[in-house]
Every structure is written in structure tokens, then in C-alpha cells.
Length: 397
Image (cartoon, rainbow, N blue to C red):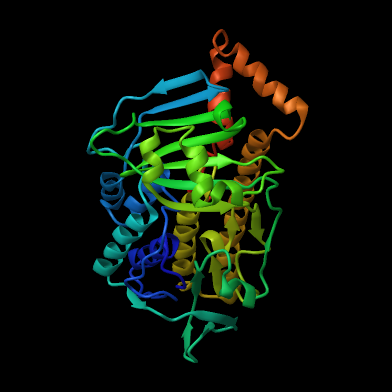
């Protein structure tokens, strides 16, 4: 296993759930501190997968996370949709939970420790080569490790993927996005609502998304195509626009700022020529975050890979072994393709690059008070279509 992010840790747990030993090789130190909230949203289907891998894990993550029950959509300062759901029972997995990725990783790491996962820290994998009998991993300090199979969860710049001749392919978005983490004021918090603003009039009619997560707010500002993102992502730039969309006190509570131009890319294949490596998470795909398909689909990648390797190790013939790995890789390529299509649809809606798309959004907003389904469409479209149908492995995403 390469990579000790949430996908790599999930894959390690999934391998241990089959009863097999697993070692995680990670470039960073065991006590590394990574900035920012990053992937904050876990869907119920992901919590269910984690609960099946290790009973109780999904509920533990939900207890550490935040479940907001109201979602609201605003068009140019006017509400066009609002819905509040009843709170979930404490003993039932919620529809979703929101928490910083560092907390998710801490909980998964603790579960791995209890499950008997071995770790090799501060070991940067710089290359990989596969053969008929297994995989060799080259470490930056000169060490080498071998394994029968490897799950590569070493991120979008995966050294394992690149050294095996597999590459991410896909376009970048034309708009930049500024993403800001803001600590909540526990003594005087804002209402727990996910709020999407179309064309917020206070910030030059740019789209703004507010998502609460445990102890914080995530605020996304969509820049116009001709904006210089540095003007909005600098310390002074963030303060300038943030006080126009939130109470002024929050400008002093910013904990992280990042600027992105998102890529919609999928690896050319999810396994190598010898069927000894399987890609998972951002090693295999990167998507814009709207709809939270990155980490959630990565968890599904991890479980499918672990189960496929367990099956392959039981195969009596080479042909069957190859078929098992090929089937798993093809299923996750198909899932990534569906996710990219869904997130691309969300991006097209958000960018509204043509006058026609802008007119459709504006017309829906005008008619939403008398045609409620148009308000619902405005609320859901920025996140892309839902992907509820499981694949042949029984996995969603």
C-alpha cells in the first residue's frame, strides 16, 4: 500500500478485513501536520462502506463530524429554495457528515493500528516496476520494497502511476476557485445551513458556497474567467470580499486559504500491464469538488481493490487472476467516468459560459416561487446528478 491519506488507510483496513497482512508506505512522518480541511464531506454510502470494513467506524466518523439539516439556495440575494430535514437518530448513519480530513485520517489511522496494519513512515516512493510475480517499490533514500500486489493511493502526482506508464488525462476548468476555511464562533454561531449563492450581488455577481463542517465553515468563491485569482486569494483579497458575504468578525477567523483551477482527469488505466498494481483515489482520478465525488469514490476504489487482490491470491490459474484484476480496474474506470461526467455537468452549470445557460438559470429563479421544482433544480444542479446505482461489485461512486 502506498499512501497514508484517507483512501490509503481505507484500503489497508479493507485488506486486513480479508485477513491478509498489509504494509502502508508513506512519504510523510507519522506525526505530520497537513494544512487545511481538504475533503470534508462523507456521504452515507461511504460511511456504510467503512462500517462494513470495520463495524462501528462509520458511526464514529459521524460522531466527530457535523450534520447540517438545512440547505438553501439564493439567486442574486433572493431565496429560491430551502429545505430542512429532521435530525438523524444517534444510532443510525446520517445522510452525510462533515469534518476536516485530518480528523478523518486520525480516526482511520487509529482503526488501522488496532487492525494490525504495519506502517513505514518517511519513505517517499519515487518509482515502481511490476513483473509477473509482483511489484518493486523504489524509495528516495535508496531502499527497496517488494510485494505481490500494491494499491497506489499516493495522490494526483502518484509516482507509482507515472513510473508504470499510466497518466491522468482530462481538461482543466476555465474558472479559478478560492476556498477558505473559517473557524466558527462557538459563542455566537451562524445557523447550520448549506447555502449556495448564485451571482452574489455583494461580490460582483460571483457564485459563493457556504458549507459548515465540524467547528468551521468552508466558503468557496468562484472567480470570473478574467479574474486574477491572486486578487481574491491573498490575505487582503480574502478579507475584502469575505466581509461582504459574512459578519465582519469572520475575517479574523480564517484558518486556511487555497486557490484552485480544477482538473477533470482519469488515469489511462487503473492497473498495470502485469495486473499487480491497482490505483485508488486521486492516483486514479481528480474531479472538481462539487458533489464530493473525490474522496467518496476513492473509498469505493479502495474496497474494490482490496477485495480483488484477495480474490486474485486465491486464483488457481493465471488467466483467472488477470481477469479478476481487470474486472475490478474496469469497474472503477467506469465509476470514475460517471463521476467525471456528473462533476462536469455541475461545472457547466456553475460556469454558465453561454448567454443561454445564464438565461435558463435566471428564468428558473424567477419562476421558482410558483414552480417549486425549479427551485429544487437550482439547489441540486451545482452539485451534479446523483449516482445512486451500484456497480457490479455492489459499490456506489
